[in-house]
Length: 231
Image (cartoon, rainbow, N blue to C red; front, side, top):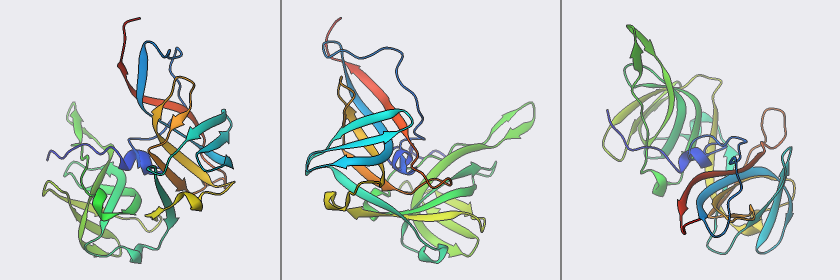
């Protein structure tokens, strides 16, 4: 089964999920304005200051400045019961893939319908006759639901079976506005990163505290870069 790779939902979802998990990593050398323009990045932490165009996230790695505009999309993540998932909704699932391309969910999130367009369903790999299960994600429309399982149909038409343990946390991504941003919230900022290290946010997501009750914090992470001039 080949289904297009999940991007936005990793990153944003992750927390959300946005494009894979966000880790506390930094490039080995600092970018310079004359050689590189970083096209994508992310940072997360506790919101300690906010005004109409800028905000500051802080955590164990220090402060990260973030710029945003009226075009920046603001989302909010909230916990919902499993019963909130019904047929016809768009759902993103993260977990471990089995050899039959079903997934054992570790996280489930209801997402806005317009974001039901990208999925990633890696096949389990085999080595010396043994099957290695791999983690991954899938996004699709719910076609069937029980108290312990879901069936998703991806935009490609592929069908994915999902097993849901009773311990899985279910969340929902809702559309918010910049007026929702408040000091002490946990925030994930995603967007291009200026040479100064400022994240120019395309999306801001109000996320949930981690299991310790604090905000998950990361340094600025560059997702990719493109050369704009010769050194």
